[in-house]
Amino acid sequence: MKLMYFNAKGVVETTRIVLAAAGQEYEDFRYNFTFGTPGDFSTIQRPEFDADKAAGKLTASFGKLPLLVVGDAQIAQSKAIERFVARHVGMMGDNEFEAAACEVIQEHIRDSKDAYQKAKKEGDDAVAKFFSETLPTFCTQLEATLGDNSFAVGTKLSLADVALWVYFNEFFDNKEGAAAAQDGCPKLMAALEKVATNDGVIAWLASRPDTPF
Image (tube, rainbow, N blue to C red; front, side):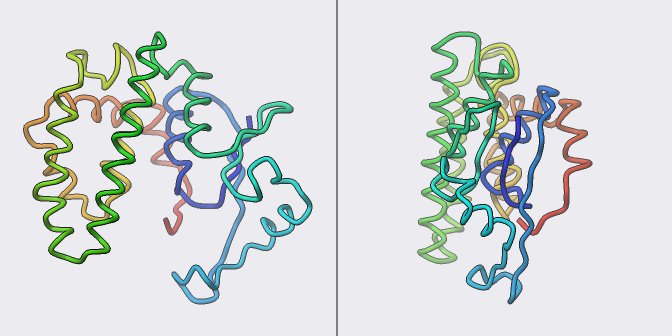
C-alpha cells in the first residue's frame, strides 16, 4: 500500500491517522515542494510531481493528488481513499449500517467545513458567530446522534472517530474555539479521546514530519 501526496498534512492526514491507529504498514510517499514567495501558492515549485504528472504516472487521479496504490489498483479522491483504507483495516464499522453512519458523519463534517469557509469570506464577525453559535450547534446536533459506547459509531474505533478528531484538532486555527464548542457534549468528547489515546496515533503524532500545513 502506497499513499501518494505532497509533504503536507492536507486532505490525507485522516487516512494517515486511520493507518496509524490500525497499525497498518504502508509507504508514505511525499512529493516535496518549495515556495518562490513563502505562503504564495502561485509561486509553488514541485519539480518531481510535475515530472511524474507529465509522464502519465498520475493518470488515475487526473493528474492530481492524493493517489493510493494497492498492488495494481490505483484509487483517487481523498474521501474514497479514506473509506477504502478504513474498510481494509476494519475501521468502517461492523455492518453496512455502521459503515453508512461513518459516511454520514463525514458528510456532516463537510457541511460544517463549508459553513466555516463561508463565514471566513464574510469577515471577522461571521467567524466569531461561527465559533460562538454555529459550531456549538453542530456539536449539540452531533451529540444527539452518538451512541453510549464512547465511540462515534458502534463499539470500536472507526473512521468516524478519526474524522471528527482531525476536524476539531487540526482543521481550525482557533483551537480554543473548537474545543469550547464541545462543552456539554460528553459523547463527542469521549470519541475524540479514544483517538487521542490510541497508541498508534500517539506514536504517529510524535514522529510525523513537521510540515507547513
